[in-house]
Image (cartoon, rainbow, N blue to C red; front, top):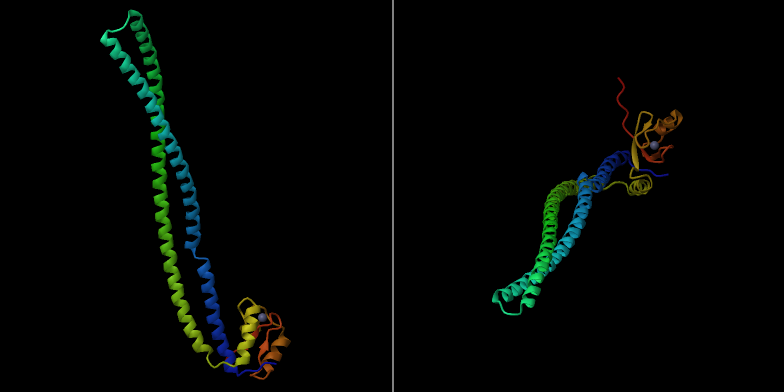
Length: 248
Ligand SMILES: [Zn+2]
């Protein structure tokens, strides 16, 4: 049997209210809407980033391909220039000149083919550069939205932290000097019963489990010594009797 002064029992309800608010703050910290938004944006950013990596890889492959293509075209062009110079110099036998002329025809065809390849690579390169620029822009937008959500989260946390500090001070004041046995029982029940260790009896109803209690049980409670700490038969919480409203 635990006993405690009735005013301590009633003061325990104020402590409980502060503890409940503190628990709500813990819950609010974990479930800030900004947190879900930050997670969602981080996932989107990771998607865009992997696309950017793929795009940059494709671009560097294409730049290499273009360099090779440039080299191929350059080789053919210098070969053409050399042949043309020999042809222009007029030296060599007619047979030589004949051979050079037919080589120049083959080289012209080859050059045209290589230039087509080069052009096609350049077009692909441009398309990829455009795509990468679009991905970069999309990433910048998501990053800005994420920074905004993070600022929103930080502001909300600061507000909750400030309220929490006020609550802690208030709780220390309200709990100061409370009957130690009552506090020990309250702490034990609060740990076992989801943070709610003490509740008021309102009429026949327990404020903890919200159930209407058996009238016999209520009568026994009402008739118990005021300093007896009574418990709800349904939820086991400390049931605090409030002063009876004056009857008119
Ligand atoms: Zn109850």
